[in-house]
Length: 507
Image 1 (cartoon, one colour):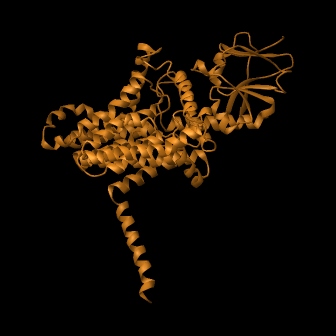
Image 2 (cartoon, rainbow, N blue to C red):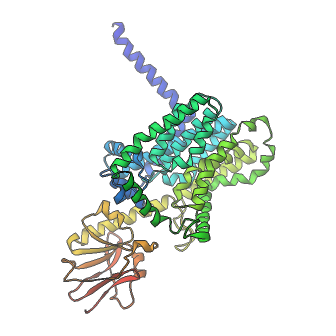
């Protein structure tokens, strides 16, 4: 046996030993734990309206059609296309990115905790992150927030190291540009953190970092403008989008004080749910009085404030949407709870462990509506399974009993039809948003409907909007799923307007 035949085996052995060594490090264990706890529980159906937008964008990018919605998310869509090439379908591809983002964030929040306060704080930060029911939920669905959190933490971690003098201004600029390509709002949310990081660099490196950021952003911004039909067309689409979504949330606009109350209510509730059991350690606030040792002085409180303040201000005064938006700043709050748990002695450890068990229980065991159908709704495993079962059952019923050419569907979740059943004719009717309802009343006859013989309500809750005097609806059933609707007889007229709808006899 000659030496050339031995070397490859030696190298393979070295690579294997190195891989095992990395896997046994805390970072490797966190990645493995995130994969094991997320992947088997992942959602099977697109969860949110925005999920459908992203899934459609994997085939055709067009912000004018909401594929995806403004501001565009170009790098998220690009990663989604690569992931779909690996996994084969849009849902699995986008969920895989969420799982990867959760794992990435766990590693980086651990590193920040270790570098700020020591190994105990790092471990608690990672455990609190992975056990948060909100983080867990968004790691199971096809939305960008979990992946975004991973890159937000990468920017913060690199900015922290740059702020203390390490020459990492180029990686920081690249991470910032990539984070903004995933979610362009991060230019606003993380801009001050980026500048804070450059504060620790000489002037030449500061300017170099800014130039690297600008050049890197152009690599995705220019294609985004081209795909959107040019800058003017992009701005026109953005204005229309903002006029629709900011009307009720912009405090310095038509929303006023009511918008502030709405935004702050959501922001507080979503942040509290994100902390969940980790919030128990806040009862150890008196320990803060002990944080007067030299170790505390290493805490980059300026960077921490610059991290959370822009996003919180935007959500409070401009727009607070879905729950996952708080994942931009939630890691900063989790780090503080980890600091308390890590330095609180037996009480801190006990409350931390109880908090983890509470968070895990909320996600895995609690019902979607723990206080009844009219009470609060939790985002947890029950919610995910109920959503998957509802969509699977409803679409199965439609395909089994209603030929598309003979069926008219009324749906609040009409966007899902663009992805799962584009062959059906759908009339949108928003359950909560009046903008998703027809602006004027419309009248249809069966003779002019093109052969439609059945009208189906995709959500049973839509029966609340059936007009008085309408014919009573009936129920169709398939595989345990029931949907209401009407058989459309000759001579009947269908009325569809902003105040509701119904099937009436006679002209």
